Structures are given as structure tokens and as C-alpha cells.
Length: 359
Ligand SMILES: Cc1ncc(COP(=O)(O)O)c(C=O)c1O
Image 1 (tube, rainbow, N blue to C red):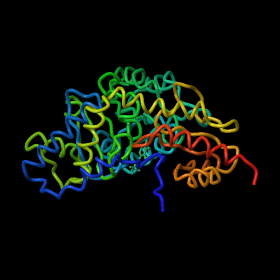
Image 2: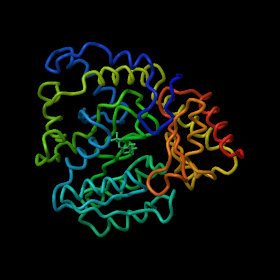
Image 3: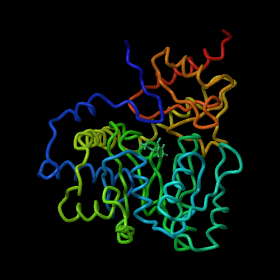
């Protein structure tokens, strides 16, 4: 049977060469060869995160574990954070913080597909007492990107709060730079726009923020331990996903050397906008404005049940995703990350048109 290609929000299609890199023999994480691999991965990731002075903790796990590690590393029991939440992943941040014993105040948009006005964030921050503002750069559950991180970070820093960003589905696919946006820490993983297999989570922290990392965290989530171990030995404190890291190293070389980061990001934008412009009449973009429309996971309200669109795409060998929660049957989400082509996008537009035909 022909393989189904992933146009899902992740994991994504991994280029053959990147997959092959993962099939090298497993090595010890306490040898020079591994230290060299981790150095390459860390330096490549710093470039992708837009961070020249800081660290990247490379953990075993998924995007969620990286986000949890970031949150727990900076926000402790009894402290308060402001979450700007545009969908499921924003809500999950609040869930993680409450499990931590921290208080999470959540700001949500007025309507689905909308975004929180940065002025509203500023107003809430004026009340004071927030340890951090936490944002999801690209809210994958709604196909919505947040274009005002820089504005929020200025307000946050003025009020004494840190800025922590879930960049799981934006890193390497959308314009993101911790330094230019004034972000203190950001989390992501191997299996979205970086286009490597699942298995590794990343938490990037500036050198200044690294000084604030907390110790009262379970060892596996302790960014502080990762940073200290890397600084002292060039290694990770615990067993890393060695083979995934081989793949991440190959994927980063593909992004930074073969494409160049700017061109690689632009490719995602072109794919996404082919969909925004080309989806048949009846499909409606979930994001309410051009500047908030995701360039990695476009989402559309569907005029027919989402299951029908998904089935038509599958007939053409393409897997896309439904909405989440109460929008499951009313929305489709299309990942444009990974090793896919513009022909795949065209094919998907045709499948979406076919789903509208009677019968
Ligand atoms: C914005 C965002 N945050 C967090 C996650 C969780 O990532 P994972 O499923 O790898 O744990 C996802 C996954 O889609 C995501 O899109």
C-alpha cells in the first residue's frame, strides 16, 4: 500500500536523509562523539531560536515535556503567571502551572480564531505581582499565530515579569527570535518544523534568565540541571534520545546550510498562503486576520463534516487533522511543515473540493 504523507500538525514528514541519520549505531552519552553531536545540535538550535547568549536544554520527551520543564523551571508554587491563551495549548499551560501549585490567570480572545489585544495584556500586568507572562507563539489548535510578542515583552519586563513562549509549532517555520522579541525562555521539539522524528524537547534560555532557574523541580524536568551539566561537561545529566539527536543535527544542517533559515521559513509561508488563497469556496479561515493566520498549521471551518474532508484527503494519500474538542467535526487543520511539496498542497485543495461534491 502507498504510504500516507503527513500534512498533520506534527509529527511531520521527515526527509529520508534525516531519517537515515537516525539509523546510526547508538553511542554512549558519556563519550567525545556524543559531546560533539550535542555541541552541534545546541549551536544549531541557538541559531534557530535567535539566541546568541544562553543555553538550550535538550531533553528526552515531546513538546509538552519541554513546555512543562520551561514553566516549572521559572514559576514556583504560590507564584502567579499571566497566560495569553488562544486555544488548547494555552489552556494546557494553565493546567501545568496549577499542577505546580502556581496561580494561572488566563486571558482569552473574545471569539474563536481571535487573539488577545496586547493592550489588554498591558492592563492586566499593571495590577502587578506576575512572575511571568506565558504565550503560545502559534496556537496549533486554532491555526492562529500571535504577532505581538515584542509588544507584550516590553510591557512584561517593565512590570518585572519574565516572558516564556511555547514555540512548539512555530520554531523554524515562522519568524521567531528570542533576542529580537525580548523572550526570556522558549520551548520546542524535534518533530514539528525542524522536521526530525519525535523524541527530543528543547528549552532555550537566555544567560540572564538561566540565573533564575529553580532547583525545586523533578530531575527529569530540571532545566537548571541540564544547563549546569552542559556547562560543566558538554553532556546531558540523563540519557538523551541519541538517535533522534543525530536526526536533529542533520535536520538543522538542512535548514541552516542548505536552505538558510529565512528561506526555510518563507517556504512555510508560501505553502500556507497557497491554502488560504486556494481552498474552495465554503471553507473559511479560522484566524480572523492575515497577520494572525498561522503559517505552519492553517485551520479552516468546514462546510461539511471534517471527517469527510479527511477521508477525501486520505484517498489521495494525504493525512490532515480535524479540529480539537468541540470543533472536532467543524474544522480541519493542515500542517505545512516537513518534507512535502507544493504539489501535495495542490492535491489537498482538490481533495477539499471533492469533499463538497454531493454523494
Ligand atoms: C503549540 C503546541 N504546544 C505544545 C504541543 C505539545 O506537543 P507534543 O504533542 O509533542 O507533546 C503542541 C503539539 O501539537 C503544540 O502544537
